[in-house]
Length: 119
Length: 110
Image 1 (cartoon, rainbow over the protein chains, first blue to last red):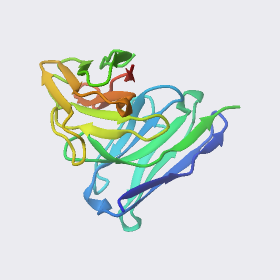
Image 2: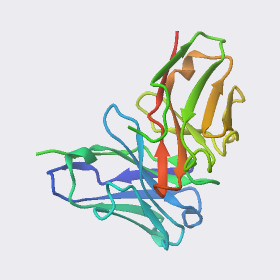
Image 3: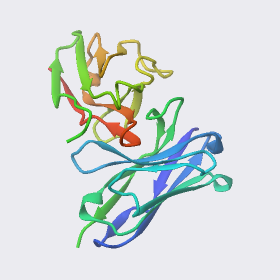
């Protein structure tokens, strides 16, 4: 079964750090660009970051560049998002997703992990 | 305020055809392909249309997409109660060097 499972979410104070993980199974992880997409409570979808198959290219949303780092370990079929200097506005459900045949076409999604930034 | 604009809500009755618009600019829709997502309440989004008008395997042909200039549309024909959901368009933006989502459209089946 093709599956993405996120973990690592939780409650953190403003200025704190958190590392999200996404475990892939059922497909050849190393063949896909991967992305993180978030959704604040009651709000729309917001793309966060994307990484190329071999990790050589990375793209970030302006508001997270310099604070968040996307990475992957193809040997472990895993995607990561290191989040530093967290802000209240980073509060959201974070989804990992595969990038399909075209950019912005996210065809496999995880169930999401909730990140709450609050004092 | 997203750089790609969708109406916040649309509605229709069972069996009807409804369209959801997505308006952008030359740096996004005007130069890249548009993708559409359906998000049912409490679930992760699902890819509905990619490359403007292509349906992934398993998506009913009641769903169709089109693009003209800097605008795109998602059409749903033979509307069913289970189509009640939030719909988002998404496209790469050459100026922002990233993916932009529309603000989303809540579809209500009356």
